[in-house]
Image (cartoon, rainbow, N blue to C red; front, side, top):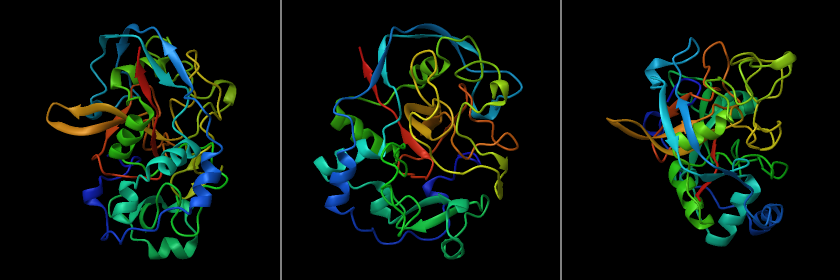
Length: 302
């Protein structure tokens, strides 16, 4: 993956620890109780759109271009990413154990860790702002001692592609294709870099959750996830299609690269080194990789 996105599991620093304990039943029940009874989906009629980008903001090495006409059939897409509460309902019903829990560790942004935990956690060599944290997982996002008790409406994180597929199967849905994801993210706009248009912060007002300040050690605003519906939706009624968390899709990165594709960028993206908070931006990771800024949303064929 790109520097802002995180390394694949096989290039992480340090050895994975033994699997951590599952969340207490009472915690699961409390979180699951906050989940909506039904999936909140936006029905999209589909159509023809110009996918990809060749402008100055694009990363050619990521395969953003060439710009091409793509036809998308009608489908429905989650209004938000899957939340902590929704994932808790899935775990409560199925007993699912995530890849992060099975491996015993996951990657966490160093700036979210207390000083002592930051010193203990091995840094990834080429991207030292990523730390391998024993025990970090979807219900302990910064490792032992952390909690999602106050994040029920935030995107679930530390979920691998395999975890996302398991949830989708349980919910009677699927992951969106890359084409569907980008069609939806653009909200009917033609070749605009953001779901709302051409300007990243219209009137100086942020429209997505990205890193503010000097990356990685000089934030001027809180770092981490915000509620899955925290910012206004695009014209298709979809929240946070860019920023907040990367989203797993059903796409593969390239003809010779079968890694699953992620779209949308995250709270760690910053203009100084990673402009992947745009509608055409893409990256990839191995199917078992889990990270503290990666989630997913569901799609349904109509």
